[in-house]
Length: 144
Length: 363
Image (cartoon, rainbow over all chains, first blue to last red; front, side, top):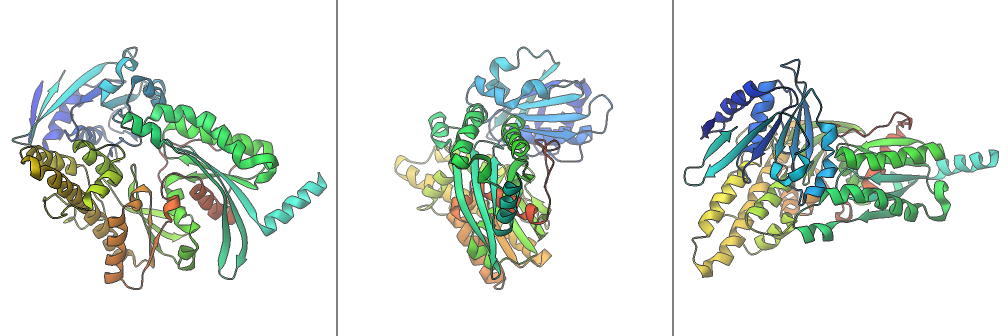
């Protein structure tokens, strides 16, 4: 599935589509350069899932969690940001094994920095790639 | 046993020494703060120990912060710093323990919290769980010049790599967040803009250095939410603006490049400072505060310090400007001890059995 995002509001359409694919314990892997809109997408996703709080960038904190209210099966959104990790070994500090719980949905920014840590996790996956068109300041979003 | 208790009682009356431990993110820190008798209006505060195992050299080597190295070294570092801080006096070196119990990274917080619980169990002394944000606010209390002008209600602007909050304080230990960033923290905006410009970590000081010889008005950058009447802020849009400016920078002729980079640095800094200062002024007006605290790592930024002080002086000449001493702006344990002293004075302490790390603790 492909989306063209040209204004902030468009992210809610992308979020609605992702929510339709979600099952408990899904990992959403978000790839794209700095400023692509990964955190804005997670904000739209949290809103769709019934979070009262608006997610903020977890780049410094590394992990932030949000309580969800819209569905019974999914009660927690875990927002992980591997931006500051410089080697795969460092993923140990995130305590990923503790974050992957049956009622949680994980949204992971910079998943490529987690490398092999994600492999043993058998959670359902959604991969999202965001590219920025510099001339038109639009985003192309590819989901699979 | 009876004699020992009597000595402890006397100690409590004369002066209280608070041992503090901070391991919420990248730094491991241990401090001992001695809170003495009141001298006139002021209390006597002496920072006896202030140990921080700064990991900046490791960060610079990697070109970014290294959390796993940080989380792992919290254990040996905490033990090493505690050994040094307590010295020969061991458990007699302190009368109470304060520890950062949130918010932060679970794996990192736990190291400090477990060490503090163990010390409280062994020493049977009061234990206090301190919020990291509250610690930053209390860093301003360590400066006697600030204590002399301390009058509630106060407004604190907390700015760091992970935080950008405006906190209203009506009393000690009473906090209300009245404004905050909706996305990136101000320190993060500095760091990520620097990264986009190819500058080394940490980006804030690098941008500030280049900005000294740049024109802050050369490159128009957005001031998001400045038109919004509320007190919330937003810095994530700056990344796109900086990237666009950076892309066009590449087309500038060789001789102009160095100056354009300085201009961009100055413009980024000005955009961030403008939003922080303007929102702070609005909060001052709205809540009729008597003083403004400026705390957290980004408060090292001179342009922010000077602009906020000048604008406050200009618009609200009677309001005290209370920035924390530069010694205590980055993560440290002396500020955690200072916040602990407020709770101790109110008689608030925790049973060691009940204190737990709380990664999502909102002030």
